[in-house]
Length: 426
Ligand code: AMP
Ligand code: GLY
Image (cartoon, rainbow, N blue to C red; front, side, top):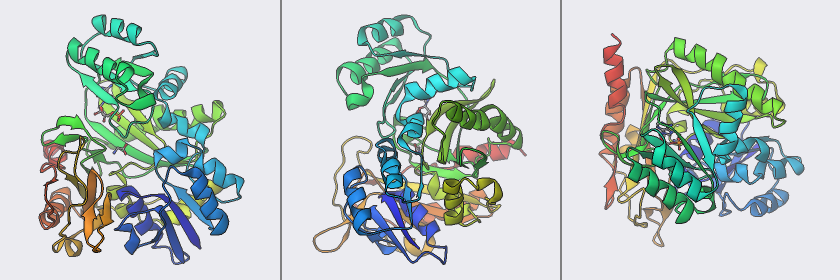
């Protein structure tokens, strides 16, 4: 079978490595892929957001199955277009992708169907939003409506911060058109859990839970990023919490999407906060998380392609989705300056890291001389699995210490909070 994967980051690298395990797979092409993915798939320089380009490519290079991994092509209707060509796909259509592409859509869905989430107001008028933050309870969270690479959310601990966040999104266009509408919502407290779940619109099969580390700095300080590292499973996601999530959140969300006439098929990502009042939805994503995927898929025992095809064929109920008992840790190595401005083209020395860990490439390229160089904010995910979390973390950090480039940064405390929670539970 020939498989197409749309995207070119660490998540796609992890997906491709998992797809390759299926002996029926004879070839994988990545659009556009990256320098690391090139070791596992043929990379063709068509941007993931160039839907016409993707369609043209598939017309001249037929594939048996397509996986559309990133949010933008999903929101732009890549799956709709590939389906129209008769290509079987993994991923939601554009209507269903609104669950991520519009925070207003997602919040209104949760309100209408009684799915627990933070209380909120929506604004498309900056003056009204600025008036609102003069009196609303503080802290408060200001969110750009549309896609903003995980950076459209500002947690505001003072009224001044809230005022600035509204101005940045609505008046200064900090997130482009994505910020012309904002959701202003209640600040929730509690540990965060990411749960990726396969759903074919009928049943929901959650994957092993994980914990992202979104802030750029150790101890959760500094601006939000796309994610600086992950561990799995997440110790806050106890069987009791999991049972509540299934009953109060996962099944109602799938039913709500069906009731709205936009059944969701693919990987539905639940960003959850376990508050004292129970689990609540912080965000939905219409895709695998990045870097959650880099710890979740290495623990998947079932064949990924089989599961993805069952999602497309709506036979997920009959398809086992099983995970290994172990743990995983992924440390993201990033360019100095990320999530702000950063340099590209720094030569990467991997040392002995590839022998010590699974290295997923997020933002890498080749220089004119053929050297491996940095090509993004998040550059490499260094991932290890082990029987216990402590060992997985130690192994990942030992491998990360092998890697060097000028200006490289990474958090030194990935998994530390999870270890503390585990210690407390004994
Ligand atoms: P999002 O892009 O919606 O995942 O938000 C990014 C991060 O902001 C989340 O992972 C949370 O850490 C934080 N966040 C978002 N919404 C809230 C909220 N209502 N209360 C507290 N923290 C939040
Ligand atoms: N790691 C968060 C996300 O993929 O949105």
